[in-house]
Image 1 (spheres, rainbow, N blue to C red):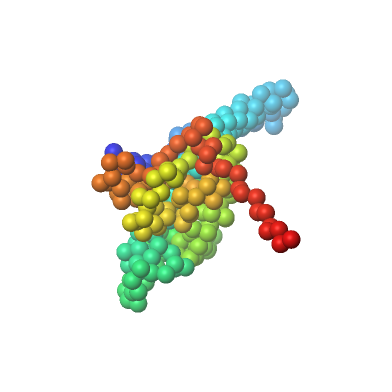
Image 2: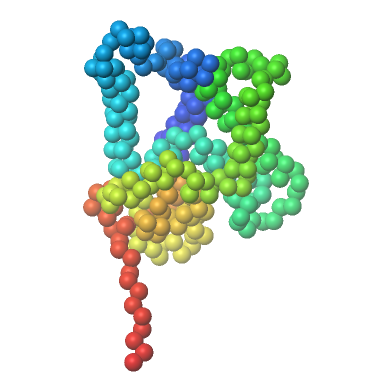
Length: 302
């Protein structure tokens, strides 16, 4: 199984989990009940005994520590370890937003011969139909995202029934309309910018990843750079984040570890017995990617 086949499986499964988790009561916060639902069970702090004076401060502290702080510490610790070692692996292999980003990339590339509206097309296409297709797919996915988020806050089955019967409550209607508009704008115009600079979770992962010089990263084999002469920057064009994939690590600060550049290079170099020029590395090999920047020295005109 190739990297991209594996990513297709993981992203599809996680996107389905994102959509169906509230519906199956796997995880959601019910505003009508005022607490979380976790695997079909009502997840509350259980402080009723404290509120009614049946338990003291020590019992309250134990409850809060076991039900809030301990799970949070465990989750954050495991996440930090994975991010420190592998970078934005969540973004490239699981994130439901990035899955939509890549899907719209492919639709736009097929219809408009470019991945974003801010790039020059490889071949000009002024077809109105092509633009309508891109807009329709983007708006549809924006609505799916808006509905998915709302189902984490409202009872999902009644919400879907009301939606089918066009009887959605006023507040939910406002949420769906506003969220759909925001996501539509994001998916059509700013999806790459958001992933690079607007996603707090993504930036947090990037900062932790950059702190580890031995973290997993894509390395370019500079000793074989001549093999790139007959290639039209396939690796850079394949990158969903539009990054210079053969550059130093700091230039790939927002790399999502999607391995699209590696797959593109493998395809170009498939007949090369030495194989791809891009590979994942870690440990001492990764340190070379993040080499110090060359200090600028002004010329001495004397």
